[in-house]
Image: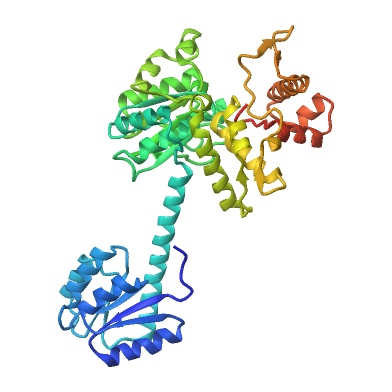
Length: 465
């Protein structure tokens, strides 16, 4: 709901002189007024006029102020109500506060006091409205879109897992929405009002991950200039989401295992452990049983994490969700960036449904945004979809002679083959250079601007590739 240009204040008092005095003060300050002469009328005005704040006298006919306050709170629990009394007592003020009054003023009313209390009440109301809108926006941002049977199974798994304290292991390809599942589990759990802390284990350097997860004491190592609270302690009472846990070192894995077993965290350099109550949700795109066989992941940690396993399906296995996802991403991007809305034609949607989507939902989102930006007309057609979009690197792949570069060996046309090959080459070179565009451009002897154009054309990004 957009804020009003003028705050609307309800004055409920049986004395006309009081209402008239307040009307003069508040209208001069640019507020609009609604009036009521008794408690029953005040309730009617709250329901009909949706005020931003209420000034409510305690002594009124037909229904006194305290009774009216209780009923107003039943209508709108967040509406700030300022109680007024000519015979105020501490007991009355306490009772008004217990019933949810924002503040309490005694007659005769002083102009500065009235304005201060009302401004505070309106500011609190604004912040509450803003917080509700942010929460709705946040929930919308992390909503899972689609009605496919595969997605319904995921929702069922979330419903079963959320109320428990069990650890959850979410597996699946990159870009399938593993974080959305983790957030949905937290949101529907008894810990929903407590912190949700996300840690990308692959993005934190090995020498820093223990400090990030468990914290450290000042002076415990070079550069530790102050105490640092670790992510597990930050998540105390709530949920910690360990994304890409398959990239965690064996040493750090042993410490995570201790948290799961004993509920204890030992900050780097600390003399004693800290007790925490944290639910652990982990995710990985790796096959952890294979990693266990290779000696790079602890089997005991795997069994501790894998109490509730959830396998995310790739987008190519739930193609019936693509139309809904395209509409959702398009609407979100247009709203967030002020773009003119564009329609995806039936031929474009049909083409998008047929693509393999190696980068899954994340790649689809990037593709939708790029098509909205780059398409000149109001309708996006199949001809607007660039070559290389959503290309899979599985069935049509073959290793090169040196066993490193993966080159596609099939395609409908020669141009398809060239596009596949160039994309695969660029991804490999970017990986070799740590996804540093400048270093990669220098290595393959092409201008950096040209490389950026190629990345855009083929939809290459570090997240999806």
